[in-house]
Amino acid sequence: MEASVFDSAYNKLISQEDLSVDEPPRHSNQEKQQVSLSMVGPASTWDPKRVLEITLAVLAAVLLAVDIGLGVYYNHLTDEPRKVESINRELATLHKTYNAASQRRHESQKRLAEETRQQQITKWQLEHQTIRSKDYKKQADKIQLDIAVLKSHLPMLNEGCRRCSPGWTLINSACYFFSFSDRYSRRSWQEARQFCNKHGSDLVVVDTSEKQMIINQLINHHQDPSMSITQSGFWIGLRDVEEEGVWRWLKGTRLIEGYWNDGEPNNSGNENCAATYPRDNPFKGWNDAPCSYNLKWICEMPAN
Ligand code: MMA
Ligand code: CA
Image 1 (spheres, protein in one colour):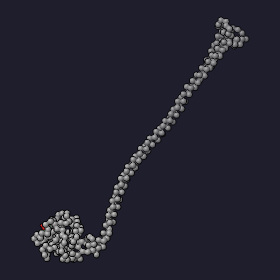
Image 2: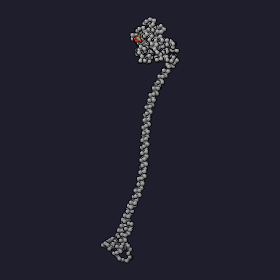
Image 3: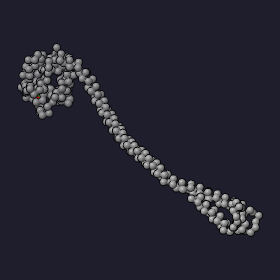
Image 4: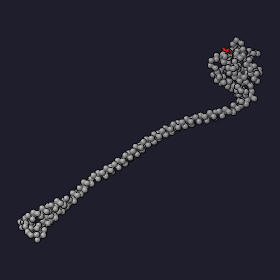
């Protein structure tokens, strides 16, 4: 279209020339231009035809440049929607990619949170198990200790089973019977002695302080707090029946060292039989009591 604008301008010029010059058509176009220019201005050194030619050429070049420019601009304009479309498509793709990445990020975050939680639980579990294992270790140590103690008792138990009857206690190669159990009601000195004799033994002879200490310890341990002190004595094999104040063991040997309580023996009433009572001080365990009193008793026999 720019070309047509150019053509019309050119034709206008030509027609103007035609109006002003009426000459036969022996002139070329160049000649026509020169003629018209010579008629427009005063005489010049320039060839008017040539000037016109150059002017037209310049004009044509300018128009061509404008045309090209406009073409380029137009192309540019017509390109724009395509570019926009392509950008839109690219944008859509980017959007999709972004969304997908976002989704993956979100999922990763979720997994991370879950793993973090799992890790925390594992940590807590470990903590818990550590405490438990410490407890187990403590228990195991205690069991080990218990085993050691029980093992140390084993020879004694074996010896006890082997050398004393059930219910009898082995102390330094002798078997002792204490009528701790309620099955055995309290008895007089004589009845108590009969019980011992029936079991191949006799009332205990407490002829060493070691014996007195062990006996005191055992009867302290089995002491019935509800029982009055008068009833809490245990008959031993010691009497002063034959001669008042002369204390003899069962086989007649005289007492050398006694473990009497303060003020005893006092023969309060008629007290010819000796008993030992649970005391803090084992050396103050004995008292003389009436032989008819019902008390508990201790038998003794050599171990088998
Ligand atoms: C008291 C005390 C003794 C007496 C007995 C009799 C517990 O001791 O008086 O001398 O022989 O009682 O049970
Ligand atoms: Ca007494």
